[in-house]
Length: 372
Image (cartoon, rainbow, N blue to C red; front, side):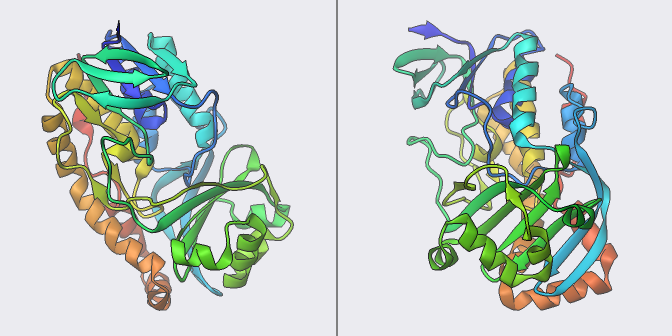
């Protein structure tokens, strides 16, 4: 049985941040990632000020890597829209590039990256933890559980009926101008769809919908695009002549929105990213939570803290953000409330700006000030 002292189960933002923070503080770290190469994930690819600051702490500057920049939030429903300034300058950058950049940083710091290997089992209420990965068994003193929205059999979460999709598009010059400096969210009955420019003038389109709506309109991109175009002239203009960057959307089902993992799994199993907390898309700050939790879990491991103490601290930090995000999410996905939401946003743009700030991480100075 091979020993691997500290293991990140998953190589997304949270797992890579966990391994990078360990490695650059001299701890031996291993990342086990099931995919063989960089790949697209269901994510709106919106980087708040907090996410950019946390990435900078990890040595990543997305602006020098070609990220877009924006300062305005646009909310639409049917033919109505409202705009408000964001409380910060946001950035747009694809997970396809960002995840790999973080893994490369972790490798440079000394972490070992193993791709194309799936962890199928994790056992151990006490350290060492035993993992089964790629037909082999490993022992670890601690692990960062970073398998994202996908459950491991031993650690289930209650599912929801929400399904998420993501597709990148090449849009017309006119549509690109309409999105300049904008993060856009269009609401429809049963879901909502976000649009943002990322690097190389590519538009990321990310949407969620209840399963009942999906069953009605189907999963085919052309059918869904036609449905979206009927919901809003703004979406019709964006999609007119747009060329998908790949054949069909990536998707994830049964997203457990609002989930906070309050119970410890083991003193040495540290849930990070979506395994710790799943905030509603476009209302919260999922990428910041992934980065922060990965860094904070690594710092807890370095300090000899238990996973329970780490989780208690993180849940306390995230709870206010989740309450606000949950309320905003109800407004976004409930058709009969869309008129009120747009009217209020048009009348009170500062309220929208305030809500955008309220759904962000409140405080993380302690994590940024860490010294081993």
